[in-house]
Amino acid sequence: MPVGTQGTVKGVSPDELEQLGAQVILGNTYHLHVRPGEKLIARQGGLHQFIGWHRPILTDSGGFQVFSLAKLRKITEEGVHFQNHLDGTPTLIGPERSMEIQRDLDSDIVMAFDECPAHPCTHEDAERSLNLTLRWAARCKAWWNQEKEENRPLLFGIVQGSTYPDLRERSANSLVELGFDGYAIGGVSVGESEAEMMQAVECAETLLPSDRARYAMGLGTPPQMIEMIARGIDMFDCVLPTRIARNGTAFTRRGTLSLKNACFAEDPKPLEEDCECYACRNFSRAYVRHLIKANEILGLRLVTIHNLHFYLNLLRLTRVAILDGRFAKFRSDFMSNYRPHDIE
Image (spheres, rainbow, N blue to C red):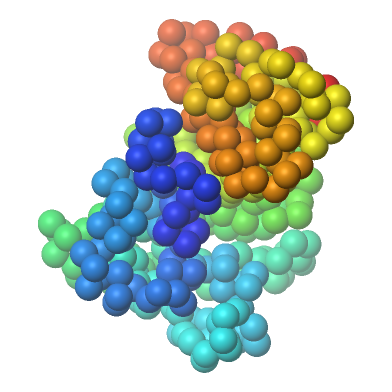
């Protein structure tokens, strides 16, 4: 799911996203609440109408941004009191407020409000945080149950528990008991090792219903996604495709290309051979590198289009491999060919 933090996936239009095959995009509850405000968006017909995207939208709860961006925050049972990162305005977001904001945004999948504990943290701190998150999850579910059924989008609970298997398991079991439309695994890719990340997913995933979507939040690199799929994860969001594109880096099946490197100055090949994206069908590495070195916006847009295509196509190919019963070979081939560093 391409990430559209401010109501736009950076560098591309909604029409281009549709052409790339994006099924769902993300909006960020915290950022859209702070600017331009959910009430303004509601008056404009909701987020779909406001941004010109007519396929599904998932909005996060705002919890992660409150904890990572907000100034002078104070966590209470009611929610989080903080000064926003733009102008310092005193603000409160709690479970009910997060639900109200997401309702006004008119998103299709909404996330329960949670606390994302810092990494590393003690078992005691992680347990305190988890207990609060579970109480907040119950309040989100109760608030949502009061909404008219025809107005209710899907509501996902978020598994927390830091790197502690017992807490991850208790979180998953408690959320399943509450009953959600889907389940996310949060608090991963926040500084822990990749082994700890995979363990956090494994501890929770086996306890989550197989007939409900399972979503790893904020992940990941191409190999991480393939390995998460092998562990039963269905949904991902990640800023990497657009973020590293703005640094002139392209994803390929073999690893990443840093187009600022001099070796590409006269390279006539596309960003990736056999790629069907607009950038690869029409332009050479040499030209894209020239645009990037000249700080031309088109260069960053072309790499962004390519990277989004790469991610979306990788997941499309994975779905086909699963349906054809050859995922194990697909996974093995991809992992053996991909390099976790720049290639030349």
